[in-house]
Amino acid sequence: MSSYKIAVIPGDGIGKEVIPEGIRVLEAAAASAGVKLSFTHFDWSCETYHQTGRMMPVDGLEQLRGFDAIFLGAVGFPGVPDHLSLWGLLLPIRRAFNQYVNLRPVRLFEGLQSPLANKKPGDIDFYVVRENVEGEYSAIGGIQYEGTDEEVVLQQSVFTRKGTDRILRYAFELAQSRDKKHLSSATKSNGLFHSMPYWDKRFADMAEDYPEVKTDQFHIDIFTANLVRMPEYYDVIVGSNLFGDILSDLGPACTGTIAIAPSANINPEKEFPSMFEPVHGSAPDIAGQNIANPLGTVWAAAMMMQHLGNQTMHDQIMAAMEAVIREGKALTRDMGGTASTQELGQALVDQIASG
Ligand code: NAI
Ligand code: MG
Image (cartoon, rainbow, N blue to C red; front, side):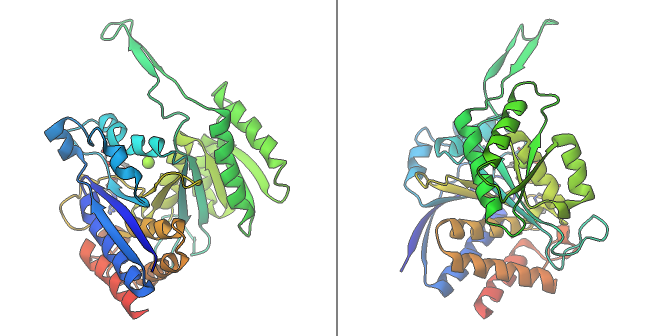
């Protein structure tokens, strides 16, 4: 029997509500696939920060290192500045475990209404491949003459050859494996003088290794407009940390709700555990009301099983999700229904048991 050890960090806000549903669905799929999953919970969060002054213990990363994967809810809550909570928990995990790929699939499901006119299931079906450990998200920089009229703020971006090439290669490989074989790069080489012309050059050079892949590139401003105007055009999108972050909220918003979108933080070499989470945050505005949509978390759970090599469990969870959305029972408020978080989780469990 295959068995996997999963570290669970529900985190803040609705993270604590959606993660239990993800676990319930995983357990149902594991029971039917004959897989053993063991879950170890870590209560690291903004509450921990209030009690201890840290988002996670000093040896937190060491505690996670031995797990097969990390399953995370959301990090950040009013009362702790976002840059402290994110840099205290989420970002150190991504970096220490070299999870340099952030993979975010975007799909319009049958049964959900896109806010874009005349889009039907199948029209929107692409991946955002986001660079996840360098780029614009850096703590390098500083403030000089703070609090005076002379204040100067510097924020550095970091683009390394190794970091740029490995994310581009991952995206080219993914595009090569898909029917459309089409890769679009997000750039802004008309404004960012050094980093983006470099990115574009590495992209063009690597394209020569993949003659079957059709490539193009768009400045991030027109890229956002295009994703709304013609999402069906895109197949695989690759972007730096910042551009990938923006496009991967916009993409799912075009499919009806950002709450179904998953995010896989992948260390492709499997030297370290990878981390799976919904794209959304802790949603303080609806936390504690039991109306959060758990589907982003459930889809992330499916991606986790696929990464661990269990395609059967992945397919089973995805099929249950598709069926429940198509039938329209037990949809949460953001998808036009009235179900609670648990009712939607239970509908998925029932679907897996009946399938
Ligand atoms: P958010 O994603 O938490 O919420 C944005 C909007 O979407 C809210 O109106 C919320 O109610 C709604 N929403 C989000 N998830 C939902 C779900 N599952 N079901 C139904 N509705 C849902 O983004 P926001 O407000 O910018 O950030 C809130 C906190 O979360 C901040 O502290 C932020 O730093 C943190 N955050 C953490 C992330 C992570 O852990 N990876 C990602 C994004 C934000
Ligand atoms: Mg984001």
